[in-house]
Length: 161
Image (cartoon, rainbow, N blue to C red; front, top):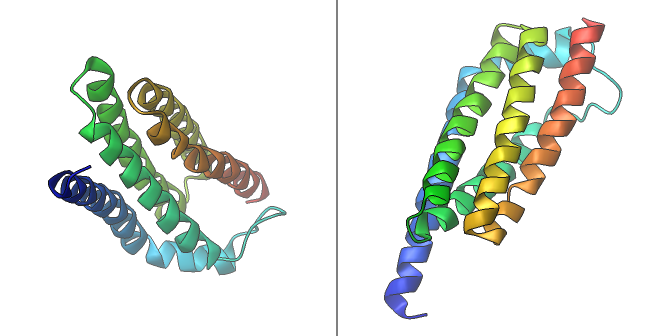
């Protein structure tokens, strides 16, 4: 790989990370008060991690999502590439709004349905990314697993509250 190509890879990775992290940061900022009261006012299910775990995990997941999308962006144009990037944007939007539904509106049942749609979108995106770049698809697996765990937590909160 020549120097110009390395700069292009690094630049697209940085842009991908900044987009994904920006969405996560904005969502976190908008739900900061709701998240604080969640820790004190809401009965949480077994296996609920401490509140400090969530921003760390999501920070890592958003970085992986950004790198994954950047890898697909750098792939040659194709229907799968276009579909995959569209699904990336859609799942990012669903991810953003889940926090608002859950923490700010405390619509736990609706948030669970929203999260199940998010899970399906991530899986669909992962399978589409796999047609374009296998590493990009693998980078989405931690997010899919975490959203699976989040669905368990969301269900528990809904049932307990």
